[in-house]
Length: 207
Image (cartoon, rainbow, N blue to C red; front, side, top):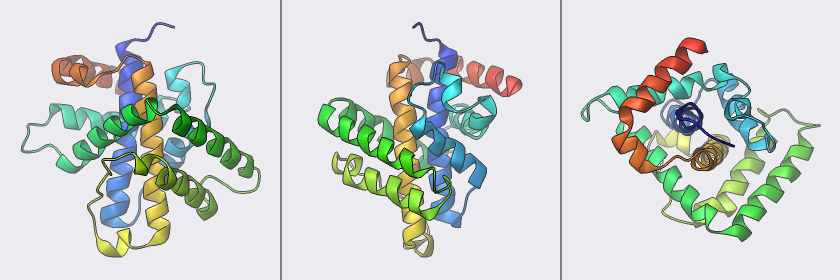
C-alpha cells in the first residue's frame, strides 16, 4: 500500500493528541473524555483499512492536528517544550519496541485480552485504564529512556490518573507505530515541516 503525507500527518497527529491529553491530566487532573476514548480506541483497531479509519474519522484526531500544527508553526520560545519532549520520547520508544519482537507480541496479546473485557466495561472504565496502564508499565516503560511526566503532584499521585497517563502513552506508541508504517521519519519533521503544516491545514478544513 502506498502511503502519503496525509497518512503520515494523521498518524503523527495521533502521537501529539496522546501527548496533549497526558499533559492535561498531569497539570489539570482531567481531559476531554471523548478525545481520550478516541485515542484509546486506536489500540483495538488491528485491521483498519486506512490511516483515517484507525481514529474513526478525521474528527477523532482534530485535537492532535491542532496540537501538531501549533508545535510546527510556533517559534522555539513559544513552542510547548513538554509536548515536544513527550512526542520525541514516544518516537524513540517505538523504535525500541519495533526491534523487540517478543515484547511486541506480548503487547498485542495483552491488548486482545483487554479487548475481550470491553464486552463488560466501557473504554472509560477504571478497569480498562488500569489494564492498559499495566501493559505500558510492564512492557514499554522497561525499554528506556522512560518518559518523565511533569505536572502537579496531587494529580500525578492519583493512581487512577497515573493509569490514564500510561494508557495514553500506550496509545501514543500505537500512533508512532502507525506513523513509522506510513513511512514517517524524524528527518521529515526537521526538513519537511512545511509539508506537514500544509497537510494539517487541509485535514482540519475537512474535519
